[in-house]
Image 1: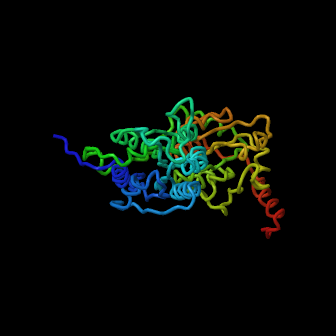
Image 2: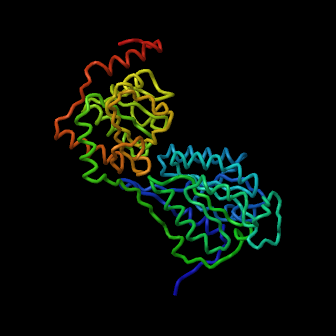
Length: 387
């Protein structure tokens, strides 16, 4: 007979999250660090009670502004290379709406962010509640429907047992390197406090493995062939280089094949800024050095980047008529940017495999003094000492 444990929906949320872990390259990390929350009337007797009575190892941090909480949580996840998160919870109405902007930012930048905005009563008996959004055409529409277009996963919980599939699906998205972003689980106020006999297995320790998918052999051959014909290639290092722990691999790749690299804003800190091949930021907020090299590049190798308008100068940065784009990205969606020839897979795994193929071809770029001269021009423009 299946063993069950009776608890409220909110207590089940807390206990489940306290037992989630991620594992990458054999290193296991507790995934959920804790909660940022503001205990308004929508969650005080639900999640508030659950976090007060039995938080487990979860830290509970009182916020002062819901948007600020979520921005801080997104920053924490980014600095943790997406292997740790802080969940955020709010009351109904304006408190929930304050989190929407941060959710949009997290989704756009593929940062895991888990939010629990309170919702109206499922029973509709205390209706309308304080700060409830009333839409005359449908009583099922609430403030929390505004989260739908800016989240990678959205759900509304109107029965206690629904939380089980909702949390499992949220973990699926949050721990997927290619699809991660904001996840919104909207829980009706009365349902947060409803008791249910949850199966014990639901609260067992779960380890979500973050793997390093390799690109198909055909895709590796395609991009290796393009790069091998290139005289002046340029690498763009994006945030995916950070999350893959591929910084040293990218440095070694560029050094071996004498290829300079520029950094997106998200790619900063993945590699050493003092590396001989590093040209600094690229694009609208980039350096003179990287943008000089970009203007003459005949092949652009974009690694773990979304290739936004800031990075590409609204697609006008690369002025060589024959420029060819190559992308290395976990996401097929981003891999197709700029009509690129793609290799879909983990940045570190693909760079290592690509290096083998270029080595077999005996490839080295055609740069002579251009990289050093571009860096010298940048240093002179900044008033830095010239070597």
